[in-house]
Length: 97
Image (cartoon, rainbow, N blue to C red; front, side, top):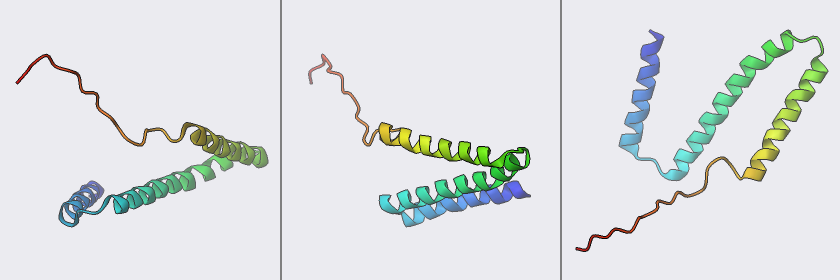
């Protein structure tokens, strides 16, 4: 039954996009919200299990904070994972019209 609910939510999203045709700005906002939501759900479910299995919670917390800061620093150096715009190369052809 839960699978039907998941499929229905995807189909509802498709219908909303096809009918309303949202702008690029609102799509980016929705993608940022959904990414933050998924990240928070993953963290809120995983961190309690990590802390339950460890005896030294201060060191574990420091490792988690160092990992988050390291990820932010690496992202600032790489300017994100994907380029801002894509370009396609056009190869010259020998055909003349």
